[in-house]
Image (cartoon, rainbow, N blue to C red; front, side, top):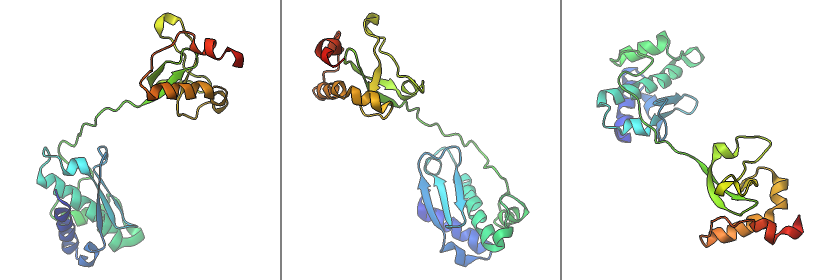
Length: 208
């Protein structure tokens, strides 16, 4: 449903509820990522926010989308008419919905499930022992509040700590190992991310 169509139905609701002047004050915003709440109305700003996925989804009928728009418009109309005595989904709001020819249901009818793509956030880390650079799941990196995850790859030959290249965890440790991090960034810039056996122990033994 286009924004122009949404505004037409908002105008319909305002005209039907005998507050035509309100329609010109209402703005509409389509927001991506709204899947749990399909829409909301903010009466202080006269703003209606609608789920971009829902309003553009072909699996939902025009009547369902119209019901959503009028539903939210009636919230603004209710506050406009009754001010501080307005109710959210109470008798006053329900009367306005009925006046617009719709069932005053709190929840929208129909299948409103919209699948959200699963996104796994990762963080780039470097081993303080072998200088291997790899991606680690963010929840794994921050799993322990007072310690860093350990490098357990290549047969357990290296068990040093993994620290993020650009993170903020353990600033003192990062400061002490800045030379290692800088070297890792330098190697990563040319695509060299493979582990180097005992790299730090051999090359920076004088610093420990």
